[in-house]
Length: 340
Image (cartoon, one colour):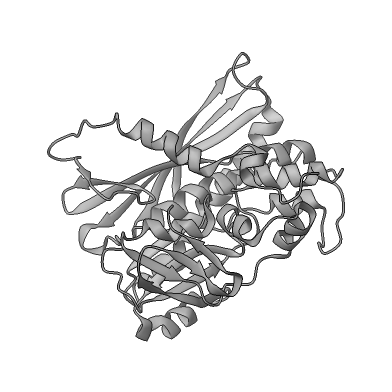
């Protein structure tokens, strides 16, 4: 096993991914006029569409190689929750409420056992989000797909005056973290490589975990929508970030020129400590690949931070503050990130 395993060595280079996205986006210049025109919000977690007094939001995401963990365990009844969560948490980042969802399954051969279990998870995620799944597509693609892939698209809605953009964030504002349930749906390629490199299987028991390593990795992604929307009724929320691929780097998407000092990180779930030890992964790599226990972040005025934590309830914690400059730092771990 190579020392200091990284996401790039596992096959996912997040910087090259960013370059690929930029190469795609530079060719997308057409903009609709009038009703339905885009509302520019560069680099955010969901797109905004002008629809009169309200804005519609639209975003799409999938479950990634977490599906391979589900395949090895022959357990697919929770990955639908992940698919919904990855989309609705992005939707909530601008203060929007998810209202409708469509799913897409690409599979090498029809398998009602798999699709039935996937449907159970999708239904559970929809209930958690108070959202309707209005349709979807199952594509049978034996010449393209080996196994299956799962993705979804979420439609949301928010009154224009309630849109949260991050533009009002100022140095001194507090950063509040909401605890993660585990790995969620990012970094699974690295996690799987670590498991394999140690000669383990997903059913293996590892010291420090109460379940098999595979069941820990399969723990569904938390859905934060209801807590976030409730908090917006009680205090000023200036910015929100879904801590997914890129880890703490996601905070840099909120406002150019503003950085964040994470002075008191939330405690990582036990699975992260196990993965770090097994893979000899550096702190820097862990915090830019995984959520490290911080599944979602909110920026609020410092004077409202304590009340916000109380309102958000279990798993909420003040972890730092907005600062001058475009960096995210974790001083206690000597970590610094300068770009998303």
